[in-house]
Image (cartoon, rainbow, N blue to C red; front, side, top):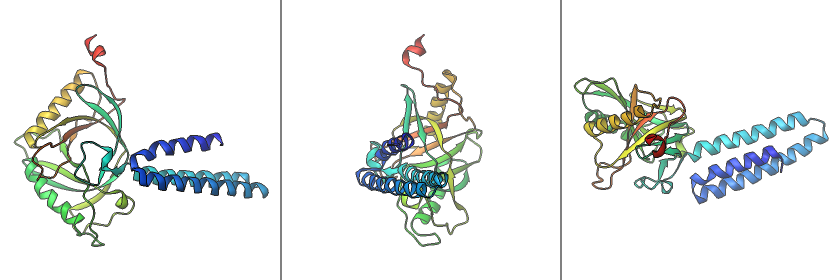
Length: 274
């Protein structure tokens, strides 16, 4: 196998594992067909003295395949995450490192459906915003299409807001893998589709209910832990992250995210003590 082909083959094999056995089989078959096609193309073009063009087609085909593969692979089967149990698909990630205070994750760029709401409290803003987004996935879109609910649900919260001040909260639903490429346009002009950039985040998890107070306390806890080790992160906002339906009473899983500003910092216990 050509060295470039071997590298791309290994890359694809490693990234397929997030998608479940059924999708892995599909991607493996597609990969083999693509390799066979490109070998035939290279052989044919060599006979006609156009090796450069054959190589360009070969590489374009591989890159296009990998872009489709990785775009779908990051929104995958919920069985890949122990704490994501209420939806068929969840946002998948790579864990970079972990301490006893937080972990660092890498998320690929994916599309979300979002809406903004202004209120004194996150709970009130989230209630209004949730209704808009739920209407969208229930069929209030240009195709009248019903869209699967996924997890997590994100709430973007400004760090500049004081507890007694009005603030703007952005609530976002993750679009499922089948709607990542071409999601239907929302009917409500307050609802919009956007692609969140590839990012690394510092994460702290907690149970119970995600409220303004609990989120503020956990965000402060994570911020203090990061400041203690000199980590660089975006201090302008954080994400409140929920994985459970409002009807779930027990074993709830919530998170706080700060976006990594530079290289992630994950000191060991020994490094902190020295």
